[in-house]
Image (tube, rainbow, N blue to C red; front, side):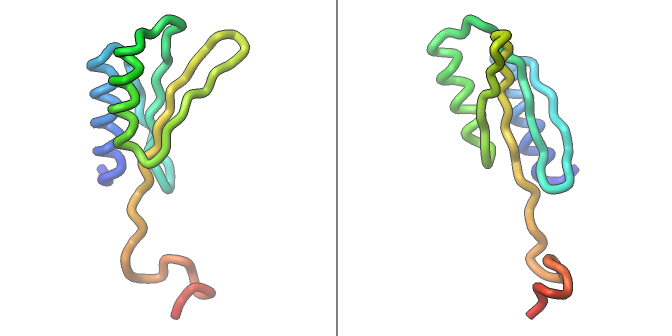
Length: 92
């Protein structure tokens, strides 16, 4: 598993430990974590959640008019340090 997947899995495990069961999805350039957030969350739990998702490269909260809330976090995969990273037009 790439390092991004390991980091995403660790974030998901910590979220699950504090009561927000989370799932991880691998994508081409990043791994994502998503967890459903209940309508009523204490300020202490929000502080814990923010501490956990701060480990990610990006995070946010998607809220709908139906009162559904999904917490998401993204961990980017590392870009190779050498080689044909950008294709022929990006070579030096």
